[in-house]
Amino acid sequence: MGNWKVEIGVAEGASAVTLRQVMSPQGSLWLIDPFHVSRVHRLNAMKRVAHRAVDDIDNGCVVWINKFSFEAVNGWVDPINFLFIDGDHSETGVQRDWDDWHQYVIPGGIVAFHDAAVFQGGWPQPNWGPVRVVDRLFRSRALSGWKIVHEVDSLVVVQRS
Image (cartoon, rainbow, N blue to C red; front, side):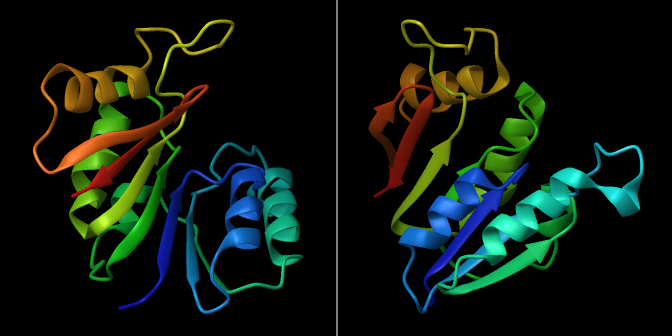
């Protein structure tokens, strides 16, 4: 079974750089982002910055998928041991990413949600999409087979049992 990590929502690549630095040298990091916010697609600065930063790290294998996560999941079959959900922050978008991707996370695997917890002095608000989805799935009714294992600032980490 592969050592597969998937990040939904790369932006400038800061978290992808960290993931690549600490991942197994034999692992694969799949980075999913359509980089659609640029007015001039050919000159997409955010995409160029992300590629340069991530590609400067020589560890493991990186696969870039320039699609929305709901498109990238079509045909996906590989097991995932770490999934980072940081794409569309609307409640519908976060729920869709969860619904589309969590089935591929192996037992013992991790899903991390960005901007999913309200904390003192922090930026997330109770009505934010990631907060609502995490509250509904893991706090209100404790989704069977999953549990919150760590929280730091806005990041909520759940693990599949």
